[in-house]
Length: 294
Image (cartoon, rainbow, N blue to C red; front, side, top):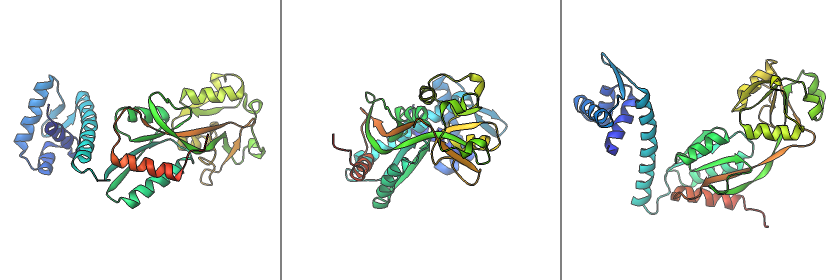
């Protein structure tokens, strides 16, 4: 299997038809069709469903296209690094969860692309499990996760500040009048919580006990849609300050008492080579956010 063949496969997936892909990559349609037929014979599996002039990817075809994108991204980045030893260009990919602490990371990213306009910034939004999976596959240069990070697997640098946890409630709800929420106050209330078990464990440790499964009316990975459910009256969302405290959905954030906070860490794969663009970003970030003296 050659890189050229993988590029052809991705081109077909992006264009939607073999004819459109052939026109885009400047080869004949019959030649491109033969390349794909040879690839299918080499792999011993169908990559396309063909009906009349329409085609669609099979499950194996979709899998291979996704893997091909990863391979080609890594290959292109390696070629760029080797062919221009002074270049700060290409892409910088950062995975971020939902937190106002991301501001310092994005501030450094802005400084990078402002100074080096050939750099294209890619932001991936997801939870910690999704971000680390993308890091492990080489699709991200950096990720931001809640402490504690896996410091054996990932190199890291701390991010200043802390997240404050609490309850998001409708502004008209009786709980909205309180300055803080205690475990007792939400013992029997319907809750909308993160799908991530480490977050659930953190929450239950704060509460001093596990919650009745009947209380958990919904789970989420990103908070915005959870806020809509809270606005509609399904339940209270357990989340971070500033994420859903907004006028659009008429919601209020009430911090927990006793106070519950978490910190964030910028991580990258410890034993993987880092591009010059990623190295420059890390230098900028650490200059802007020096670690406190120990």
